Length: 382
Image (cartoon, rainbow, N blue to C red; front, side, top):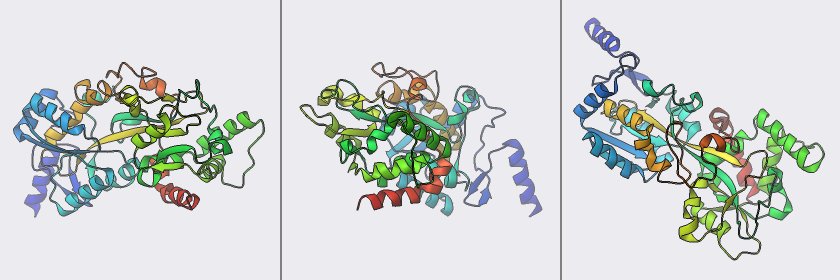
């Protein structure tokens, strides 16, 4: 028993900070991993190529093309699969709990579950390449986001030459009753999380100020704050839900409409404006904000069979060569790395400018309030 304990200590000294935990119990990695203190990209590449394999799941189908490009560059066999957030979460828990980990990397967008369950319960490892720490803003490091997008309010710019709304409280008015289109929040964790974030005291205060500015009088409410009052009114205005954002933008942006609805959707859908003949524009005039930042996080599964290849892929996805599949080739995709370029047709030209119009989700608050927000949403649908 003493000999076994000494062996564990010896490995921990050689590889500081990389002890893996399966569920609640600790386990030592079976392969040598380069330490952050001794990080050197060429050495990481050597170790990754010695492993020779990598298994990835991600919410985007583009992970397949990215996996192929990574495999070609480094000579590593890659199995890449598109997989939704719930399935990735269940699979990760199951693999780590059983001690039979098959997946190396997950790319998920469920911030509340990630920061309140998967990371603190040691199902995944949040690793930032040491040579990237000074490039990636701290707000996107824990957990590490590799892809950013904007979920926004859009309108039909054939009917309306400028935005038909200039204040977020207009979304609660009779004019837009049953005329706001969005993907079903019950199956979109980030949107429920956004709604929860609006109830945070600082955002509630901003909403109260926006109400006063728009109506010329202070908000009177029996709710906890202006955020809860806004949600109650917005949900009562009966937004129309769809299965996908594609359905939303087609309802909003179809040409020839006399009285088109508004839409709440991912800005990436503006890439289809020309190919599908859509009439869409972003409601930049709407105060105080018009949506939120969608983030996709990249995490190493605890006990990954190819830990160095996994780390190399994390590094790759923070570079333009890797994440460029979303940023350069796709309108509406951004990297937290400011050195990575974006699509030339972007309305604003940088994610820094987008950040003036959209807010970040509070994962901790959303974790605590998701059920309450969803209940309020479901009650309003009756």
